[in-house]
Amino acid sequence: MANCPNCGVHLKKTYWKPNCPNCNVNIFYHGMQERLENDVKTAEISLNKMYAMLDRAKASYIGSKLAIARIVLSLIPIGPLFLPLAKLAVNVPFVSEEFSINAITLYNAVSTMDFEGLLGMFSSESLSLAVILFALSIVFIALGAVGSLVGFILLFLSCSPKGIQRNLGFSCSALACYILSGVLFLVSGSQFASVLGEGAFSASLSFGYPILILLAIAPIVINLMIKKNPIVVKSSAEKRKQEIAEKAAKMAAEMEEERKKQEEQRMIEEAYAAEQAKKNEESK
View 1: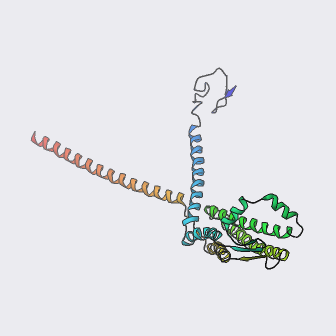
View 2: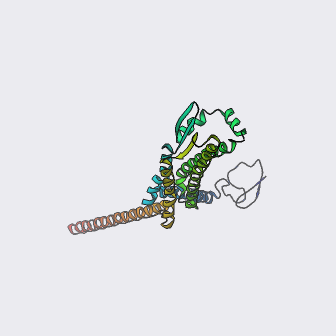
C-alpha cells in the first residue's frame, strides 16, 4: 500500500488513477519541480568539479612561463640515460674488452643474461658482494628512470593539493637513485678489482653520468621556483558565468531597445490614426 506524496492518504495497490482521491494532486508530477532543481544543482556541482580539475591541469602545463619550462626540464633527465654513463674494462687471459654502459646496453645485457651463471656468481664467496652491488646499481638507475618518467607524467596534477610536494618527491627520489647507482657501481668495481686484480678489471664513470646528475637537479630547482611563485589557477566556471551574465545583459539591452522602437512605432501609428480620424471628422 502506497501513500499520497501530498496529503499522505493511503492508496490501494489497485488504485491506478494519476490523481489522489483525497486532494486531487497529480501523484506522478508532484514535487517534480523540486526534483528537477535538485538534479540541476547536482549536475552543476559535478560540472564545476570537472571544470576545476581541467583548470588545474591546464594551469599545471601552461599556467606560467615557469610551468612551460618545467615540462622540458622534467623530461630531459631521461635523455642522458642513452649517453655513455660508465665504462668497464676486463683484461684477463683470453678476454680483453672494454664496455660502455648506458640504458640500451643495460637492457640488452639483462634481456640476454644467463641467470644460472649469475646465481653461481651470487653463491661465490669472493664475488657475491661485488655482484650484489653491481645488480643494485642497475636496479637503482632503473628506479631513477621510472621516478623521472612518472614525475613527468603526473605534471598535470601539479596545481592540485600537494602537487608541488609530489613533484619534488619524485624528482628528489630519482636524483637519489641516480647518485646511489653511481656510488654502488664504483664500489662494485673496486670489489671486482680486488678479487680479479687491479689490472684485470676496472670500472669508471663516463661523461654521461655527471650530465645525468645535473639534469636530474633541474626539475627540483624549477619546482622550488614555482613553489616560491605559485601558479594562479584561472577558474573557467567563473569566466563562463561572467560571459553568460554579459550575454544576458546584452540581450536585455537589445530587447529593451526593441521595446522602445516598438513603443515609438506604436505612438507614431496612434498619432497618425488620431490625425486621420480628425481629418475625417473635419471632412464631414
